[in-house]
Amino acid sequence: MDLHDAVVVVTGASRGIGLATARRFLDAGATVAGLARSADDLDRIAETFGDAFTPVVCDVTDADATASAIDGVADDLGRLDVLVNNAGLGRFDAVDELAVDDWNVQLDTNLSGVFHCTRAAVPHMKAQGEDRGPDATAGFIVNVASIAGLVGNPRLSGYNATKYGLRGFSDAIMKELRPFGIKVSCLYPGSVDTDFGQGSGSGPNPNAMSPESIAETVHHVVAAPHGTLISEVVLRPMVGRK
Ligand SMILES: NC(=O)c1ccc[n+]([C@@H]2O[C@H](COP(=O)([O-])OP(=O)(O)OC[C@H]3O[C@@H](n4cnc5c(N)ncnc54)[C@H](OP(=O)(O)O)[C@@H]3O)[C@@H](O)[C@H]2O)c1
Image (cartoon, rainbow, N blue to C red; front, side):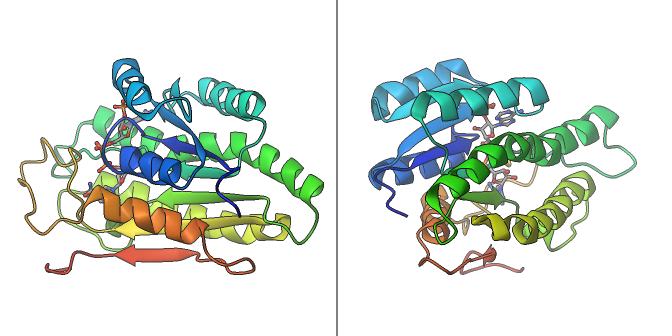
């Protein structure tokens, strides 16, 4: 797909991997709608990025608000080519001490949030597929899971559950949506240098990958040759135990 004409939705675009991904697609010439809850952060980013970036205040845990936001982007910008499901958070604690609210907010954000965005985006992509014909790509969905979707860790039970769940969701919709010309990819990054781990008590990982390296990989899977679907990518720091 020629990304110069593409409309890309990135969730969790206010910082970290989502912000770097928004920048990467803007650099490729796309129009980007960035979703997050923090209006001030999105406004500041919009000032830097200019007209090609549309800030969209949206809490992905709210199904109705998310549907309105995604429909609004597709209506206002005329199409919806790429959805990057990146918004997510982690609440780490011993399983017998993990607060029920912390369990729930991880499921609501990391799993239900992805479902809400996908459910809203797919009808637009299917309609594009009908317009573009059977040989064209109708859309891309890139899910940012985690290596925690492949490997369990002490104190990460809730987070692991959401990311293992996202792996199953991704594999199912990859097979379901491929006949419609919609490519689904799932990324499993190890440690990335963002604010994500703050409060986890584990401290920064000096070997963590940059958010830009994950953004580059998101762009890479979308830019894969026509007829090729990169369904899964595992990204690890060059130095580490896992
Ligand atoms: N950092 C890592 O080591 C690492 C490794 C593997 C995978 N990941 C995954 O990568 C993704 C991004 O993580 P990150 O490291 O970039 O974290 P981050 O810097 O904390 O950014 C998280 C983003 O998600 C947004 N967000 C959180 N809850 C939201 C909600 N309910 N609705 C809309 N947006 C929401 C935040 O924006 P607002 O607060 O403004 O809403 C923010 O933009 C997550 O899914 C994470 O699980 C991270």
